[in-house]
Amino acid sequence: MQGGEPAASPLRGSGRRANLPGLSPLDRQLRLLRAYALLTYPFACVPFLFLWFHRHGMDEGDYGEIVGAYYLAMFLAEVPTGVLADRFGCKRMLVFGPLLLAAGFGLLLGAPGYAGFVAGEVLLGLGHAVLSGPPSTILYETLREHGEQRRYLAEESRMHARRLLGTGGSFLLGGTLARIGAPSGDAWHLTIAATCVLCAGAAVVAMRLAPEPARGVFRVRKFFAELRTDLTRPPLIWLLSYWAVLFTLLRYPFHNYQPWLRAAGSIEPLLLDPLFVGALFAAMNFAAAPLSSAVPRLVHRLGRRPLFWAMPLVLCASLVVMAWERHAAEAGTGSRALAWLAVAMFFVQQVPFGMHMALLQDFVNHRIGPAARTTVLSAVSLVARSCYAVCNVALFHAQLGHGMAWTLWWTGVAGAAATAIVLWIRPRGVLRGETPIA
Image 1 (tube, one colour):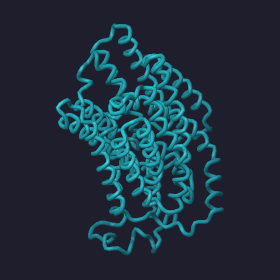
Image 2 (cartoon, one colour):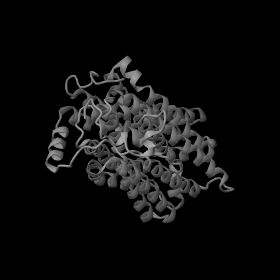
Image 3 (cartoon, helix red, strand yellow):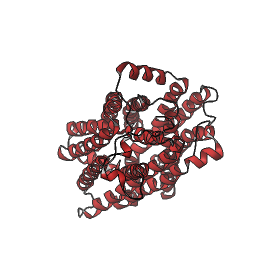
Image 4 (tube, helix red, strand yellow):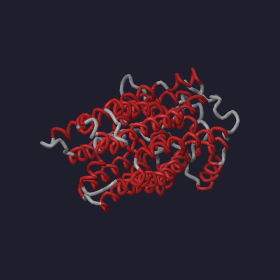
């Protein structure tokens, strides 16, 4: 299929929808994938989940364990769901994943307690595992089937930008619902219910997608032979360590935003306003979206090596600044200006957040074969998420025992050291940027 357009392609299809006047099968598929991207992660409740957990008796240690259950579920499900996607097709996973997410959020709403929260997070972890590879795989294979794989980085960047915009819009919706849904402005239950509905909407869009290009008969020996070949490539082995460091530095501040806002609200009361919080989370995603779209231009202008260095180091520097603000607050010398400086670090953290997915997916997709593509992407994700699952529990228990300032500081320092080590041991020439960027 490389470089050609088979006559029997499912995208050329047979159905009435595949022959819309003026819209090629490729364009129609890309249009649906872009719509799906807007609804992939419509998490209106995420800015308020810590508060929902706290309302039902959870402390920061419990919170770390609950989120850890999510990552543990992803760890266990990543590769099996990748194998299922490679065996039965990505379209089914794009339908099934949002339904799992809707069920998980529904459980958080319907069974508010430690056991219900853990079970809900497990379902959310399963849903995210289902979705960790298929959107990228179906995009790459669709382009490859039309001989357009050189467009992958540009299209993946646009898709990720739409995911960020969709998530940002849902955050703003969540803040609005929380504010107007209760006299006290804390209608967290409405934000969870809205998230369930939006996730179900993603499944409806996925049902309209054409299946990815046919791969022929599934042969177990060929599948595992290609999987072994791909996972033992030196660039992929190196990327596993890099992604584990970067992912930890990305996810720890994300899960810490709400605890930080709750703590800093004693200095700046606006940080406790749910409408402001929803707008803040939306603004962060809206800031990240253009950065995702700009990735191909940045690669062309700067090359991959500066970008791979900058992403984790920017995160480390922002954590140190946030630690300084918390240290001042704990010492009684905090101020509203310092609190807003820490909020500014939220936006600094969106720079690598907006850029990283397209860069890493591009790095992987151009180096692996089609037979086990989703499984390989899932295996790479598994390593990063399993490392963070352990770190998440440790970091939030450290935060409970030693304070937020201490934990933020040491995470930033240790992250910078880990970044330097990982990039120093990279295979020679691996970031020279020889893959297409169009």
